[in-house]
Length: 459
Image 1 (cartoon, rainbow, N blue to C red):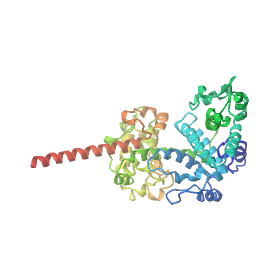
Image 2: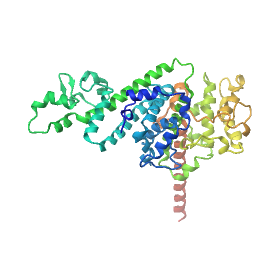
Image 3: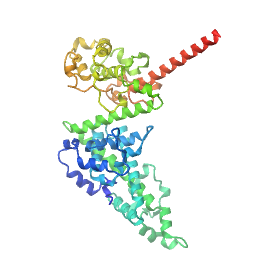
């Protein structure tokens, strides 16, 4: 039996599930019951490549991943069949709230991520409602009525009660069946208001044509979208008063950022050859001409405030990944520098010198008054808080990935000087990869043209 909380995470049953949660940190522990439901979902594709969720945190992440991956090539719905299995409802409710809170804390209610999540909830509901189409009409009708009435009294809706729904644009006031300002939603209200006007036609058919289940589905989807938006806004306001946000939520928020960068990189790689794709997983020589405007500006030296963050948080990860593993956003695993530079020769001889050069170009030179930033640079490369890069220290900290364009605009706005190539780019490394391949193709085309011209002259 399909539970209403499988569709509506704001139902009383769903709220009860959330209230029964224990320690939130345990939501990142393996959950055998969840994994068994996922594993035994009919039509679910099972392989080592799919990475099925076995924790509540992973399930939350997969919810968002499903929506973003839908927009990429080679997307296969069967990799996510478990999201449409009604048996998952208890775990799915928790995953929903985890996502809401992670996005609210990490990005805010007006962010692109919040809008994407709200839209993903709409699409998820639509797909899940398809599950009840195999049930009897009576069951479908009762299920929709019950679920919708958890959000609004369907026998007493005035058009002013759904102004926010109308503003979303999926419903138009002119297309609603109204009676003295009341929106007709249920069959009994339809018959009471208009039954005596119907002749020679089936009242049930007329009801379905004028409102019926289609209207209920639209109302249901949009009301949940509105409540989701409002909940994210509420959490965001409360988060401002927190001393320290929950670490699990911060971790999930960071995973979402990496996912967005990966999806964007996949979109740009979709037209590339498999050879180019694989080559980006290993060291690639710098092509300074392909550096985005923000990197060029940072390389020329920061003349005002923000030197530390510009060099340590922004430039260091970009330079390191651009040289050692530019295709990081297409990978599923977290990287260590030794995986692509086992002797640290490239890192010490090319990556570090380029970062130090930009630090020296600052005014005043960064290390002249803040020499400790050399240690922070090593930390951002994954080698802990040490003055030297040593393999023994690797893994003490995480090798940071490049900041997104959105974070640069927010925290280092002086660096953001976009050109026309920056459009639809979400990360400087994505810009670099795209520009680098474009320059390579132009160079190859020029070389081929020169060879053709030479061969023709020889003839």
